[in-house]
Amino acid sequence: MKRISRRSFTAMASAAGAVLAMPNLAFGAQARVAVVGGGFGGAAAARYLKRLDKQLAVTLVEASRKFVTCPFSNLVLGGLRPIEEITHGYEGLAKDGVRVIHATVQGIDTGAKRLSLSSGSLLPYDKLVLSPGIDLNFGALPGYDRTAAEKMPHAWKAGAQTLLLKRQLEAMPNGGTVLMVCPDNPYRCPPGPYERASMIAHFLKTRKPRSKILILDAKENFSKQALFQEGWQANYPGMIDWLPGKAGGKVASVDAKAMTVKTEFGEQKGAVINVIPPQMAGEIARAAGFANDTGWCPVDFETFQSKMNPDAYVIGDASIAGQMPKSGFSANSQAKVAALAIIAVLNSRKPASPALANTCYSLVAPNYGISVANVYRVTDKGLVSVEGGVSPTGAPPDFRNREAIFAEGWYASITRDMFG
Amino acid sequence: MAHLRSIFAACLGLTLLSFPAPAQEMPLALALSCAACHGTDGKSPGAIPTIDGRSAKEMKEALAGFKNGTRPATVMNRLAKGYTDQEIDALADYFSKIK
Image (cartoon, rainbow over all chains, first blue to last red; front, side, top):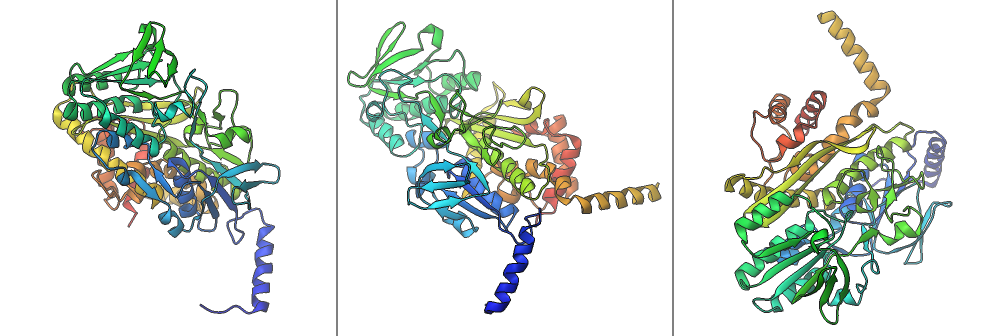
């Protein structure tokens, strides 16, 4: 590399300074974008910000060095994949030019536009992307707190909790009942609990065939319901019972010591109890004032710009995204819309109106996949699905098998797309 | 007609020169969402078909076929119904140009 003399460096720096004063930041001045949270939204946002504008200084702040995906964590429970295969590092993002800092964000000074990090340093930004995911709302379900979660795992953040639930399934007696407690909407991954029931059923069918699964649901219906129920009948007849809220599914409280849950209709005992509690936006978004009284973050649907702060964009599960489900694919699609909007705004352009997409595969059995796929646009009714729907019911085995193969293809593609 | 078309092309060229990004952005947001299944830049690492580097004609025919239901699919027939014909053209052009 050619050495730059002090004089020529000064000349270059002042030329860059002149460019700084221009409204268009694309030439020379490095706009700084901080991305908080390295999951499906944040990792994709950081990677695409850098891919779309090499000039940007993009910093990703993520507490963990390894990310275990919630998608496909049900396959770990089913014994179809080891957890290592759904664990990812951030090396690819660093190689693409994203600065990756492993720390937690302790505060956001929206006035001074900087983050205070657990490492003690301050990170200034011009634009901020928040993708903090969910927090479990401990306390919303009486009896379910952090201590109870060590006996009745939620496994709704993948990792140690996934492995805990897996160990419990392996240790339970043949003929025992697995209770699943499912929350009301909105929550992360609408079809997730029912894919989980399927994968637990697959494990039990092969290892403890006299066992049963009872789903106690706060809702009256659920995502891809007809398809799941058709798949359960085909693969696990008589093994899975689903109780909707009004039929006694709504759980009033849980007792982790007694391993029981209370519903309006009485008490249920389980050999293993998986409690998926109500949820809310990740703590940092709420603490910094980006959430409203629902516990989730309102955004402009065209750009995912926060309604609470014009320099911030909230994407993924933490955002209120109209009819889009809280899914990894939604977060990925929103990350790209926010990245394009940020680059447009930094260059004094008006962001274009977006089209967003979501496709969620669920595995009912190893060769039996189902999906929901939609295109979303902003209309006078908000951010709504304009087209799409679920897989057909009554489809032949070959169709289900192809969707199972495509589910794996989706996982390979989206994880490569976000981590490089 | 040819003359008119060249005037139109000239105007379009001028518009693109003056506002390069907005003219591109609409298909770009849509095109980038394809990556979640078909891979970054349409280069799939897994079982879902790769979509980069095919001719624009082939891509347009495929997407139009998914949209009008003449081409069987698992997911794409549901998604393609949500794209306008202009978007299908833009998507086909976009992915045909990726090397």
